[in-house]
Length: 111
Length: 116
Image 1 (cartoon, one colour):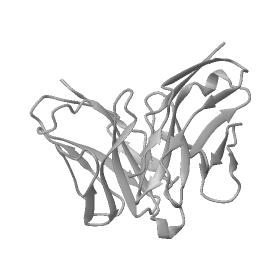
Image 2 (tube, each protein chain N blue to C red):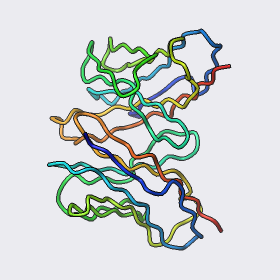
Image 3 (cartoon, one colour):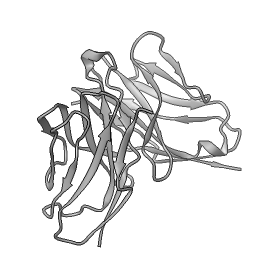
């Protein structure tokens, strides 16, 4: 069965610093990977996705993630974070008509 | 505007009572899902449905029931058999794989259920 591991439950960072949120998944023949963001008391919003093609995918608000098949990773990065990026981030992999989610990483951006 | 609506946003229940959470979507999606979210545990799948009048148990279905009488609606009932129902419940929908969406799910705003 597919599984997703987010090693960091919480990542504190200062505003304008770079950040990386780590995600590893169990290996599979074909992989569809997603990052979602959740603000307090709200649903999840899709941040970016990897379906095929270029291994580097980008979102409209400056985040990017790189699919690394050999390391079975899909880490999320941003070169300079803002206070408004404070939220919980979930990595997910598609498996048999459903998504398998990691346990989430809480990004805390401090001024 | 297309999207998913969940109601109510906050729900309080006494122990021993059943309660039904509403989920409606106007995205014309075939598949719908219910997740439970607890602090530090991420999302866990309760039930999902790929087609009207059919649904499958997820990882934590005990104490829950669902119905899918219409494509747009997928209500979740939290029964008195659910031992620890206080949680944040999220509904989602997606096109099936054959539709080309490759599993991407769209989420509603959630319902926070508290058992008193």
